[in-house]
Length: 388
Length: 98
Image (cartoon, rainbow over all chains, first blue to last red; front, top):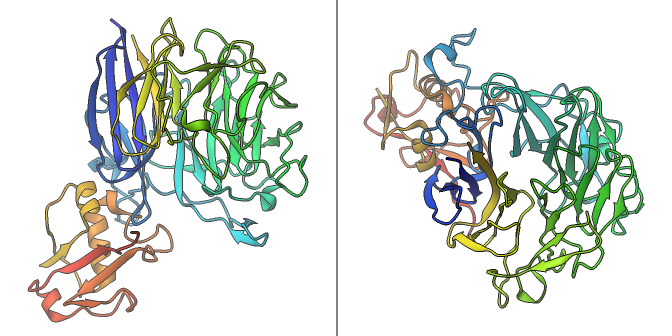
């Protein structure tokens, strides 16, 4: 019998929520890594028992955790005795060693001056589509790393950070993070990433070279609103059946591209606000998309104190509000960029977590919602595994 | 034998109790203690001092015999009481935040 596993990263640990396919009764397991920030967890599509987690702390830095038994036990990759034989007699202990390739150089700082690239944390882990030991990491300050040994060691795909436009990239309020990594299932050498606040980029050669794909984005808060880079992209999403169609929640504006990012057009339509963070796509309907409008970049909570998911069945422009089961008064939580996900069941399940610690689930494609759990620490990320 | 007290989050990461006990080859210094900790608990590499540069992480502090020695040279000998194990060497997370 199939089931669902929801991986929840929070400010104070990781939680794993499980249910059978009915999605009615949930078991809450956690906290794992209590007291640590868990920016993201994601399971391998090849081996769902293999889960990677980004564990971070302002005090003690970055840790990578890996589970091979669906989250029951965890290890820092490369900690087994046979892994600990470095050439100088010291153990390797490299699973948290994210070192930029070459001389890192500088990017633009908040005040317009140049500032050295400094690794801070891993925002997003994206396991490869064909090998459970192959995984990508999007980090702050923005760069893409890759591990081919199950997270034991990491190498930067430095063609991205060393793009000619790198010195123009600038942090958003949350830091200069690489938060979205999309792999084209029809051509895994083709990937899309997004950075706040640089924009979206595409590679056709497994990450060696990159092209900014921001044409059509208009950001009136930057010196050149139509610049090649500098746009605060909050999230991008792709349906596996239509890898040329991308959806984007930008700082302001919901956007869509039908040519692999070469050009974008706005599809905000009748949304009450086109500011927001997550955007996701129905598992069976590639033109059905979901966003959570937030009042503004100054206020970071839902308009009118009503938590509403908006669904478009037309790939944008025409949006309907989804409110059944969601608080419709006095609600001032936010939903962060990596905190929405979908399952692969029919009808499609939609899940999102809030900064107030609620994780809401819909088992009817968004028509109605129920909280799986109400009082977790602030939710940073939500990923869903559909288990056979 | 050197006694080391780690901050709570590093104890849980390394799966150790209140104190870590180390036997050093040479003299007791901050560097020799950190080398020995990282050899015994490789998951702690990068959490107390940076990879590559080996600089102390900004919000980590070192204490010996009640003194903050975070800014002392890492090769300086530690007090006898720490070297003999009468007093623990403390690695602490700085109090930060509200």
